[in-house]
Image (cartoon, rainbow, N blue to C red):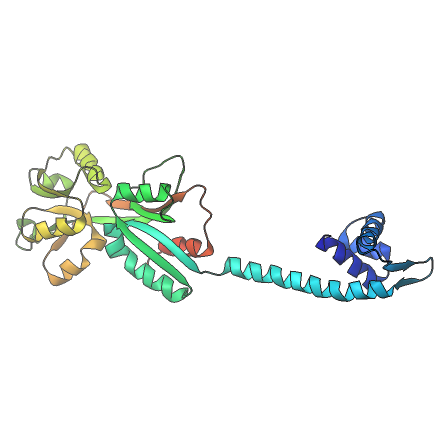
Length: 293
């Protein structure tokens, strides 16, 4: 027995017309008659007294109509609840993020998201870039947050925004007198950089080659926090995302200098597998990440 057959039967009982019941359900009169006959066969009882001038439900028909209406109302209510549930922003989002995004850019977004959607939860893992891709592709996490996203056949990349890059140096470094600087002015300077496999390092090396600039790498690290500490002890200068040094600039342990060579910024992106079915919570979180907080 199909729920549609019960609806046809109820429409027939209420309109007392095979023609109108057929029109309501967008089927033929013959189809209505066949469905009523199928119900009678299933329940082994006459449901409708068919006459040329008169339409009437039998006692069995009255009983079926009463319970069918209840079932149809319950079915409709179920559909409404399921829709509400599918639109409810709830559940846990598993995220893997590179350190610089997770420690500096992500916190205000997390705070706003959790305040807006208290039924949702976010679990964050701090990882190196290569590990973020591995976790996403292995379905260990739902979303990955990376800079300079790498395209792959089974990855979906959602562009978020661009994070400006700035030059940082010790407060007593000769460059602090300048409000802005060209990349070529870094030629020959002692430089604290990221390790070679870090995407930001690869982007900066490409930029130095294009500008024919040669810096002296004195230290290399796999995270921005250690890079900043090295610059604070005047080991050299460095180029880092602007969002990562707000506290040090406020404390005057570092000085940030704007780079003049066009729009120097690292692109940020959210990544997930192409087969990932995004929950309402994931969709809302990604939408939030696209806008400034």
